[in-house]
Length: 86
Image 1: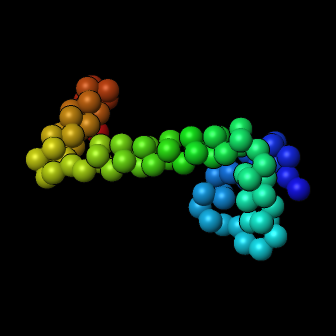
Image 2: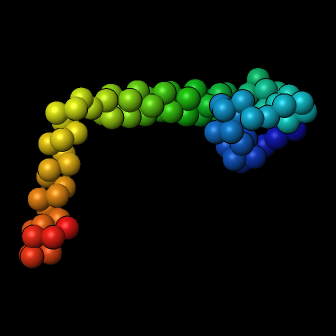
């Protein structure tokens, strides 16, 4: 059976459902027994979902915004070189 250190090493991959067979059974048994790892697993899952939602929100850019960002990058590059070339 897994100890807490072993579980935390496997927790992220477990959320991605990468384990099968006995490894998955070991993980589930540990979660049944250890309330601390259940809490850790729950918080890890919540953090991943929150991060995914934030990334999705932040990276949804319409065409006008992307043009604005592109022009700011080009402007900054021109200022860095001083000669007007990127």
